[in-house]
Image 1 (cartoon, rainbow, N blue to C red):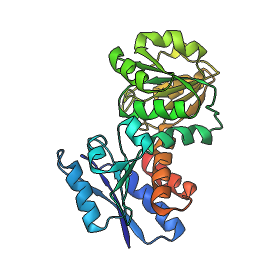
Image 2: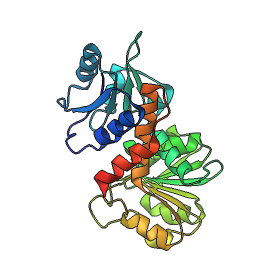
Image 3: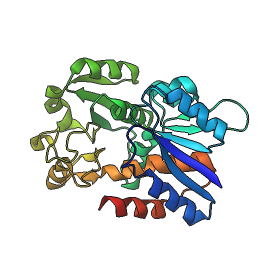
Image 4: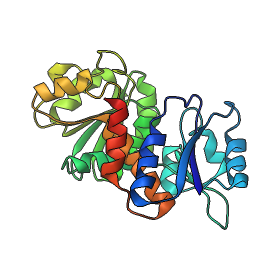
Length: 268
């Protein structure tokens, strides 16, 4: 039996185990997915320990995504984003690090028939999710503007992303009216009826992805739907980053429907 897992702190409420195990069961793979909660300073030790124990693959979440970079051979995308959320353990060579959060963004839009190439995109937030979204959108052919409460962080991120710009939240009123795509990559709206974007700036030509998935329908998504925009729930991003990790580890096409059903059962 293969063992896959997640390292984070805390991890007790993770939705990854049921999602991945539904995938294994659907394909008849003899595997289980478990969670590990190392000390906050033990990212490298956790990766080394997993390798020594024969763990087949790891996901990585807060607070370890940046620290794990030093313990793996990261692929170019993970290096650019500055974070690893998926680790593979090849038979020969060091552990390999990837960032599937970016795939979570692009595949979530693709699942809703949103074409990203040639679009004007706005990313709200310059943290880990914002970095993944900004690089993902730029690599898909979008022109990206990053808006963040601390404008300097948005400017710094934009400097690393091809042809991107950055600024404070006050610049949303300049960029959103002409935008095709909006991603909320902040935690605003999580377990609260709040939104980082004024409803008056939303319009019918937007496709809006909210990375927040609790609740599934956030205030931002309700406002976007009322404006006639295409809405993409954060659960889709969560699903597709897991799908990308599953396919990386198993070299098989993930059973997306089964994984999605397991995920939705835990969220609804």
